Image (cartoon, rainbow, N blue to C red):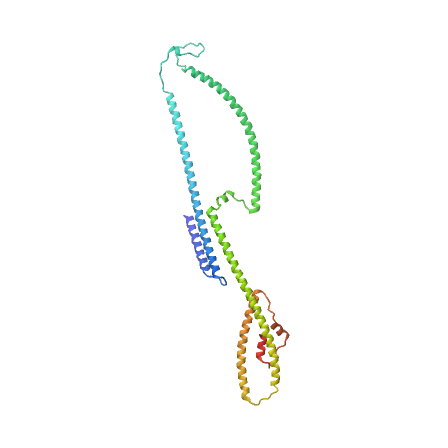
Length: 355
């Protein structure tokens, strides 16, 4: 009962763990393709089904072993009872023959049919101490005596030969036992060297999987190979997409370099224009206020555009950092080589340089 309770507790713990794992596995991980995730779940379900089938097979094997042990015990008990019955029958037959031999039997004989085998060869007055039997039986007894002498001589010869064979076999047995002990020590040393402990070969053979289990394992291997091929195909697609992304990023970088060169040219032109505009004197304050308003609006738009471009550049920088690369473009080189812009320079020109 205690073992059954422990097994029930273990099964409940296993079920609770499996439920927790199922709850965790119901959510697809981020960045994983749904088809790959579903194929993995399907393969995992197949593996669980195979493990359950294997457990059922092992339970059936254990039950068959128990039944076989019970039948062997019953067979031994029946053989023991049969031997006891046969011994009892033999004792009964012996006792019956002994009782029959004690029964007196009377029959009549003529004097011419009798011959005394004594010293005088004459018939005595009383035959109480004599045994009556036929001449044929007497000849058989004499022949049997000679046969017994011959058999006795043959048995002596066989006994001597058996003693010699026994001595030889005993010596061979000692040598074989010594060889077996040497091989056993070597075998144990090899097992300790390879496994760190003595391995029971009989137990391993008893736990050898059946044909059905081998078929299930072959199916699992085939499913794993198919899933591995699918994963390799998806990885190839991901690599192709990454290569295309890298190409587009390089093109975008070239375009940014062109924009930076155009921005530097525009900066030169704006500086020349500003140098000419400073020589012109305007007395009207209204147009100046209007230009300031337009310039303020343009600066707001420029700041918004510049913020978007900064966010784009930060995203590209993060992308390259994930790949382990370093960013060094002509824009960065121009920032390092050129001095900072003066305070009265055009903000749009500075924004273009940042681009």
